[in-house]
Image (tube, rainbow, N blue to C red):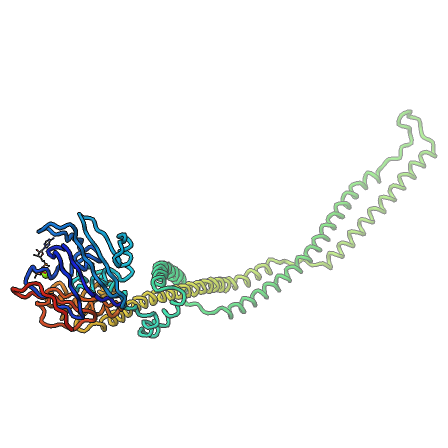
Amino acid sequence: MNIKFQSLKLENFKSHQDLEVKFGDLTKITGDNAKGKSSLLEAITWLFYGVDPLGSKNDPTPITYSAEQTLVQALLNVDEKPLLLGKTLKKGKASYYINEVPKKATEFNELIAQLFDKDLFLSLLNPNYFFTLKWENQRSMLLQYVSAPANKEVLKQLPEVQSEKLGTLLKKHNLSDIEKIHRENKTSLEKKHIAAQSRTKTLKGQLEVFTIMTPVDSLKVELAQIDKQVREKEALMDEAFEKNQAYNKCQSELRNIQDQIDMSKERWPSLKNEVIEDTCKTCQRPLDEESVEAVKADKDKRIEEYKAKHNELLNKRDLLKKQLETLEYIDVSELREEIRQIDSTGTQLREAIRSYSEFERLQTQVNEAQEEENKVLENLNDSIFVIDSVKAFKAKEAQIQAEKVQALFETLSIRLFEQQKNGEFKNTFEIELDGKPYRKLSLSEGIRAGLELREVLSKQSEVNVPVFVDNAESITSFKQPTGQLITSRVVAGQDLTIEVGE
Ligand SMILES: Nc1ncnc2c1ncn2[C@@H]1O[C@H](COP(=O)(O)OP(=O)(O)OP(=O)(O)O)[C@@H](O)[C@H]1O
Ligand SMILES: [Mg+2]
């Protein structure tokens, strides 16, 4: 965008009742104080934005004489195309014209806005304007035209480990999200690490209770031998039980037969001494011989039967006695004691083995806890590393950007960042000349600083606009700016003079 001023026409603008100015590449305005030099710059800013050269609203209606209306008309060349802008003020009411066609305020403002940004235009036109802006706006305006370094460019200048780590993470998230993720990770992993540490410590404490433990393989072999011995003895025990059971059974059968024999013996005397009656018990008459014989025969028969049964019992008893003699009753108390003793030799071994397996279980738990602790610590360190890398990235990015911006200036130093106590960078904006901030500069230093700055803005934005150096008498020399140059100088005793030169 290339803007040139061709001419400016003023009617009843402040002290100017009727004035036409033609501009060249160089336009020199001279005149004594209060001849209306600054008003020419003001006429331009009022026409474009209704403000004075420093951006404040202004009313140029004449106060020293009466006039029907105020008019400012400017003929511009916008990229070689003429554009005639006009604005009148009548009884406080403004009217707008584009190429002599009346336009609404909004249409007029839109056209201006399409041409260039207000702050940029005023900064380019008036070297003092930029510094009236808030520092944040100054900063963003300057940075708007200086591209931020690409991630790749920043990564290239970081230490390799940080660059690799962030390079991978940046494929998925942007820098600020990476930082958010890992800050939250860090907080939760710190808590987790404390918990993991305390668990490991507790388990290690429990493990310390076990005095030096040696592997128990040999003890297990020993115990197996003891168990084998016990099992062998127990087999003997089972055998003895079986024998004793048979013995007891035989003995109880013998006792039973003996009881039956004893009972049988008791019955014998009454059978043997049974009297053979020869008289009827009821009628007292003597019985006949045949009947007596029958009674006798019955008694004999019963005696025979008794004897046979008794003998059978005696035979059975003899048999059982003989059988009992072949059987053996084993006293197991000794064997039992022996088993108890053998088994007791294993008690200590068993305790040692149990204790060792408890030790082993605990040791596994300690190892697992330690592993978990290490893993958490590794993740925590990873997040801390990422956070540090982000910090380093931001610092490097700030440095590169600051260098990029600084490279655009010849005499001014530009501060874009301020390092805080925590090492992080905070945005700031300060323009310094020889180590002095702008607000401390002299009038001429300030103008010179403004000119250098508007040159950078003009070059970077590729917007070429005339520059109006007011009070140029206070500055002995300055570099030829790009675009039209309009200077205004106080010359004592001289009327307002406008000369056009090279
Ligand atoms: N609304 C107004 N109506 C009439 N005259 C005004 C109005 N406002 C300001 N003036 C006067 O216009 C005159 C020109 O002012 P201007 O600031 O343009 O002068 P200058 O040539 O830049 O002076 P200096 O050399 O002091 O900077 C001054 O006398 C000023 O008081
Ligand atoms: Mg002035």
